[in-house]
Length: 150
Image 1 (cartoon, rainbow, N blue to C red):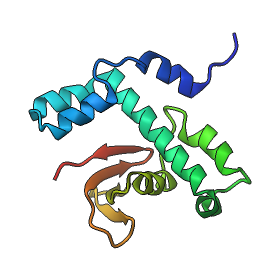
Image 2 (cartoon, rainbow, N blue to C red):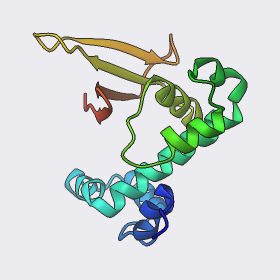
Image 3 (tube, rainbow, N blue to C red):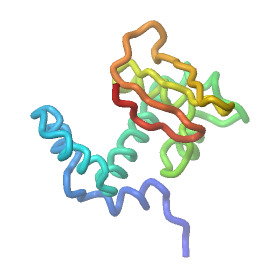
Image 4 (spheres, one colour):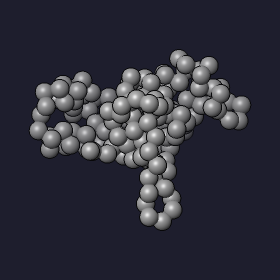
């Protein structure tokens, strides 16, 4: 059969998650108990739905500010091609350019602790945008981000 578009393939089962995105935001604003929020964020349909949303938000920011971001691309691809191939599909690794665009799209400062591949497990902190006070903290292991709770 014909190959399915990766975004459509993921979004289709996630169109009606048990807890819709705005309902989840409202729960956060109401300060519901932490176990309830953790259960919501760890539910696969909700989690996948949020990841797709953030990927599309990142793609939109990259494309809207393409003149700034295209200088970071290699291989002669356009921003649109990069987004279609590397940002929008699920199961693609995220990188530096993704987190810069996401921080810009959300108007939030993000601290990323980059895990050193050497012995000892040292991390190297980077704040996006530089010089700002981070509100979100992430741990980056090659190809994957985890939320850090401080």
